[in-house]
Image (spheres, rainbow, N blue to C red):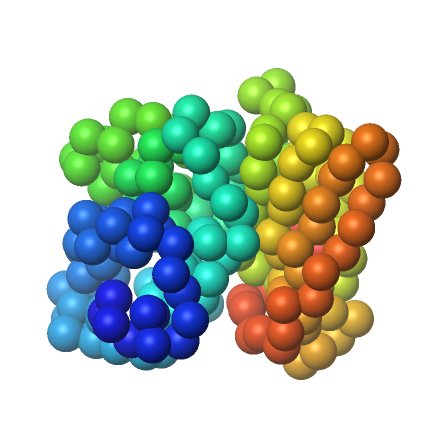
Length: 202
């Protein structure tokens, strides 16, 4: 898996080390574990997927994570992206709107003794204001806009990574910088994520 990621240009040693450390197959159903390390997303139920390893590595790299940073993740899914960020030394706050996935992620992360992760069941497009602000924000679902509540909870300076598209088939991965009350966007290319559902999503 790490070789396929490196071959596509990911060189952040902290990202690669974290992805070596976290056993990806534990975050999918047992019947799908043989597919866990392939270069493709894997279904995790309820219409959701675990992103392909390259996308997890790319988004983690774009965040420029440092130890003890506070990171907000929108879309916990089965917990894998949060686990990778925690393995990089961050304090992770992850929000999931689907109760069954919330319970799966919470229990799995506790079993793995990743105690620097907190999981919340809620509308992720509203963020987690009582725990903010956050040094970094990562959104693992695509919506029609950048949710204003998330921008408000991003530190200055801070970085957000989020897929956005005016239609569900027209998503671009954006890296957003906030600095001195100004917002700058970098377009990282075309992507295809599940829908970001909520007050500021679809």
